[in-house]
Image 1 (cartoon, one colour):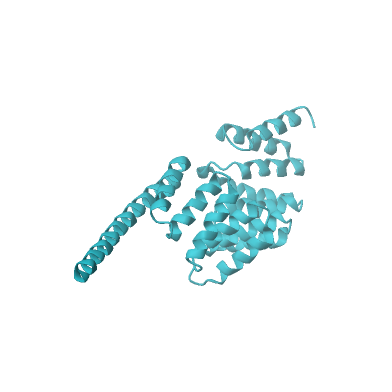
Image 2 (image 1 turned 45 degrees about the horizontal axis):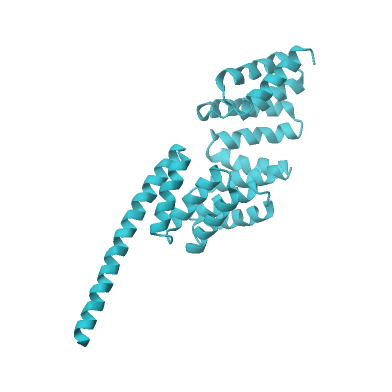
Length: 251
């Protein structure tokens, strides 16, 4: 009888292992599907698939990281932080997740905490994308109005990737915020060329404002008109229209 019990237990364990392996394979499939949807910007479908992957295998740090990213893009920063911290609890050396966590913390206004996480990322010499961390460090400094430090961080990115849209834009904006409008227009005009393919209208808007502050209303108007033409659903479209109305009224 004992032999039968042992055999049955062994078979049961093999069955569990088999079902566990099947669940893991399904989880990996849903993770791939969800990641593809995430990369395409289809966030509801990405969330559906990634939650299914988590249900089948909650111990995969990549699933937790990608869930964090979906919630970040849906502006649910509380849930994004929760999943990214879960990813790091599963793999403390997962620098991509730590960098993503820093970005969430910046959005939450937790700048000191963000910088602490970024220092860990930058100390990881195996991390293949340090420029991502420097962009986040620049954003953390920029949001604290430490424009000199922000500029240094963005410059580190541009030394490696000269056509990075976000780094180029915020590098230019550091000059705008410190009222060096000539340097701002120079940097932001370069950023415009890099950002157009990303449908990112921020450098257009701040370039136009910088020209306006320099007293060059014709270039300012041209930039605002370009923004309205090229970015019909852009974030700064309504502001550009408002500025054009002011300029044309003689302000």
